[in-house]
Length: 194
Image 1 (tube, helix red, strand yellow):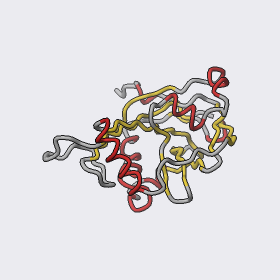
Image 2: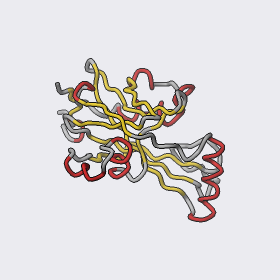
Image 3: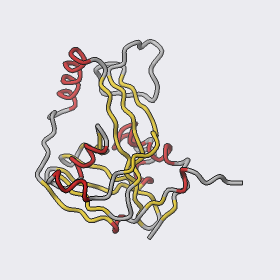
């Protein structure tokens, strides 16, 4: 007997969502090395960084797609950090006074946890045995979108619906964390709504 539990969550078509724009949100860092330098400075002051990222899944032609922000035609990001508030800041209306009038973000299950052992670009889905003080902990959460929502994209970014088959085993383009998403989502039997 197949048990229906968290797998029964509905996924809605990309066409159910309206996309608007709002003022650009400049990135804090101009490069990966600048981000790692900032991480090192922050680590000295505050200890290990804790980050959360949202995995937003829609469907197109009954195939799951992950919504990702693209910055400068090169870097791909999931929506992130402090989750509901940051989702509103990144993709909500430009005026925070409008946020309570919009459908609420429903934060779902933790899909994975990644660890940065040093001030280097690589992260791992485990803490290496020789590391006693990781520098960053990143958790990916599945966010269940409502049937309809307006998503406001900062002018300096693009919101792309990337199909799972494009992410799958594509570490060259998306990196280890993003290319692992199809594996992480494989435990779900998505119900595709109209």
